[in-house]
Length: 104
View (cartoon, rainbow, N blue to C red):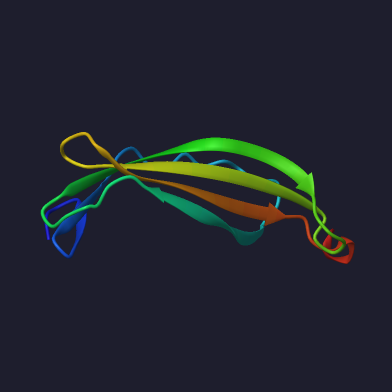
């Protein structure tokens, strides 16, 4: 496996800059899911560079027992060694307030 990458099926993934982090006011966490768009196949021997950015941050009210939710959205582009966009992903992270009786 090449240094700095993760090899599988002959494809190497390289991370660009570290993912930007956002401080949440809450400590409970949920995976908010994700979605992918694929533009062309990655083939054996490709080196994909991943660039991730913070694309949105917002707060909304959850259902009773959840309280306020702090939501972060990250987007990532996967670009091959020829500069072609192979895929794009969007992922959501959720932290939430929780029940009122847990607050101190």
